[in-house]
Length: 149
Image 1 (tube, rainbow, N blue to C red):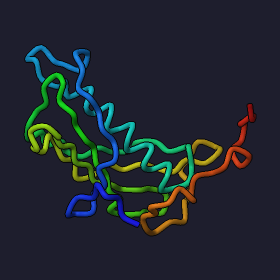
Image 2: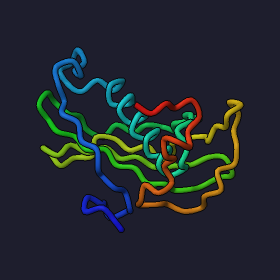
Image 3: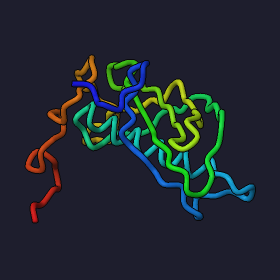
């Protein structure tokens, strides 16, 4: 099942942010550091869902190509798609676009996350393709050190 927010190259745009005053740089446009923090968080969530493990870490973010900007009050949307499943890793591509101007703000060709086991080292995840379900997410009773409320 594909999202209704899918882009032509398979990227799903499902996360949106409202650009607020605290997100601005000295030039009055969106601070790149804020945007990269949002992308890293969104990519981590995507990796957790794809790998079914809440313990993933960012290994690599390739060249970041800023193409346009956003101003206070703009709405932006972030999209990700898995491009490769390694033995212990997941590589994805990211695009961020401005919903107001319809311009692409940035694209990142490679973001790599690594699946981490209980010992804190990379472990094989066993997946080879994208899921559009949340069936890979572990249930609370399957997660160590997780007490139910």
